[in-house]
Length: 133
Image (tube, rainbow, N blue to C red; front, side, top):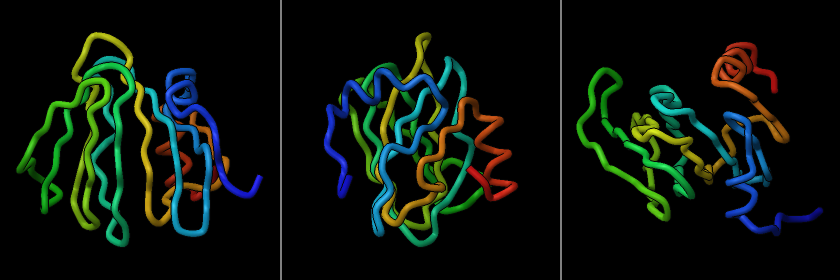
């Protein structure tokens, strides 16, 4: 497939993994994520690229900061809520609801190995530490 074309809502809602890379292009990547109640992605920063996040189901709390060890801004995002995280911004997405949080994210440039599927957050952390999918 040259590009990616599908029902993004269905792809996101049917994703049962912590993170699934749906498409990786040269300059852009699409991932779907699932977080259990109380789970978060963990604080991270992408120095070289922006990120777009859209919630399809559940309730998210987005935490943003210019510094790693604090939270300067928080935003509540429900289904259909979206946010842009500028390059160099520390951020965390927390499932602040009682149900699963389902979201998709666009990274520019790509941040994860093409085709990666991380069933759990622990798998994602291990993959990043080992630089594998």
